[in-house]
Amino acid sequence: LFRSHRRELFVQIEEGVYRSELSEVDFGTLLRALGCDRVHNGEHRARVDVRPLEFSIEEALSNAHKYRSPGSPIVADVDVAADGGGIGVRIVSQNQKGMPPMSDAECARVLVRGCSGEQHAGRHSGTSSTPSDGLGLDSACKVVEAAGGRVHLSACWEGTDAFTTFHV
Image (cartoon, rainbow, N blue to C red):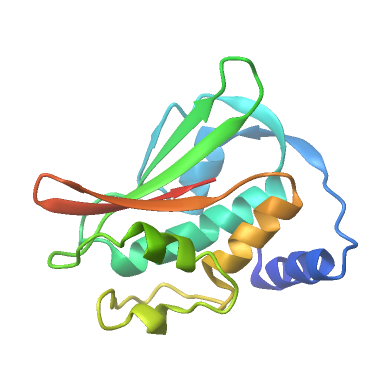
């Protein structure tokens, strides 16, 4: 979404006037267009409200670019519930060397309004030329929830590497 459209979407949600609009989405095409390096199970198509989905994925990718290990891929994985009751998208990135995974409490806190990256700067500092409009993961969470979805963040060790996963 263009930055002005992202802000407009958020304002509509804040004012309670947002109307969800469903359209057919090819997940592989969308995720690659938004900047995922690899997409697993991207052949799925579904009717979803694409604006909140794009908003949240763009914000997750902005954070992944800032904090990932240089040169490591950002991977998306698409899951469709067997009963057709839902679709999940995970954005996974390997943390920079020396950056441990966030705790469960830290993962929950970054989805709360008013939390900023500076609050974690001592432990989770990153540098990037990736542009940010300052809305953050808390706003992505609010937008997705307004459209009837859910968001959460998780982090873990895999061997000697730490990974962060954004789930929508």
